[in-house]
Image (cartoon, rainbow, N blue to C red; front, side, top):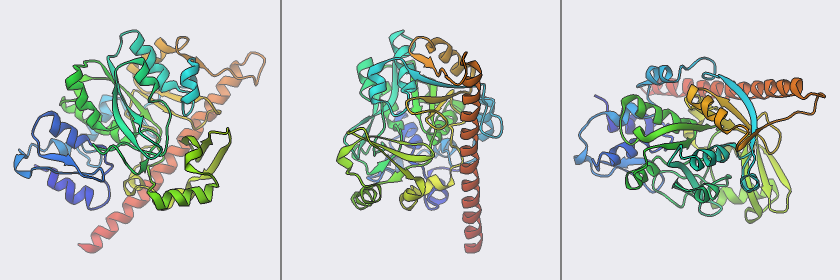
Length: 378
């Protein structure tokens, strides 16, 4: 049976580790104590002697093919970009959320409604810890949720709180450990495509701590980018701004940097290619295809969120929140607005699918190169 040693050899050595933390989360939740996260956010052996060689870490890794068919069946996955029951454009009705939100604040708006109505106990999210840092968090109150909305130059990976990486949103799996102390039984999980895939694999196996997750919210993801001091200064130079003046950051088809003075700097993602995290070059999932609901700014106007419902659970949540904490986009393209809305949503979905196709093509080409290199070495 394949185990963590195989992950080290076939995933880590090929720069495929997404640092989702799923393997460490399971091992820790079971109190095995074999795995940990190193200072750079990569899983590693903490005590190899404690490993019982159960093989579950390998099965739930998003970079292995284990359980792929299982999770596709779980969410009724369809080509080319996962099951799509409906596509809409929403924003939250809560002005406090909209002030801090990256796009339309739809994710936080949904979580607020569910929490206020006792439908969830908590949500796994991430909280800003400074311009270049974000900390995994289990939000169990509306105030804690409000404190986590928006995105900045950061990521939260593993147990490292002060990271040098950026992702639009990237909560750590190790936040799930807090659920044991909080005794949460109904939790919403917000994560990137790689994290969603690993979580679904955990659910397919029925292993802790995924048993408490009742709603999975996925985020469109173009990739994660490393921003150490040198890269940060380079970004300031090419973008002609100071990091201390940044209010929020969003990645759509380009990098959108909103400054505190109201100005927005837009940079092509090619400007960031030099410091993209290696594993992201091999990921073909742009839209979090295994989530209940998927969210992103692409295809929507500023201040709005494109939302894809993928499961009945996700669709039911939208029905509960629309008109409460979510409002739908109302186009002024026609007198009634109906035809304009349909056209806007159709264009948004087209852009999302095109972005998904491009990411899959990039990942496919890079994996072919990797396989060719491996064959040459062999």
